[in-house]
Length: 93
Image (cartoon, rainbow, N blue to C red; front, side, top):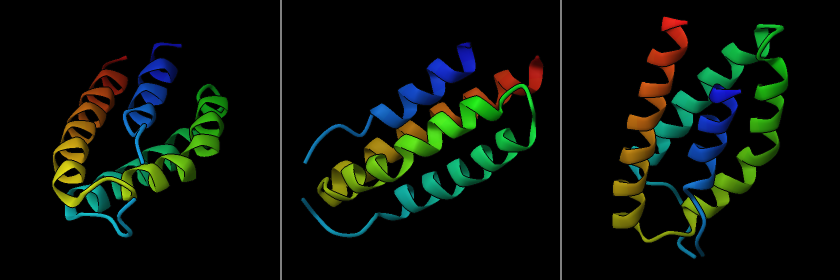
């Protein structure tokens, strides 16, 4: 449950509104998120969490793309750091 809350929190960081493409940090963040969701989907105990993340994923990506580039860069760096922490927590359990 804690993983799901953290994962949804990461995806909800992206609430705002109009640019077009993603900065390098956001591309890295979504690449890492793709890998993490894929890994979660393979595990029966986290499969439902992965599906919940996927349901919000496209919307989050659009919201990140709507941010100005400099805001994208800093926001995605924070999100990537949070994702790395979440991965470490998951690995420790």
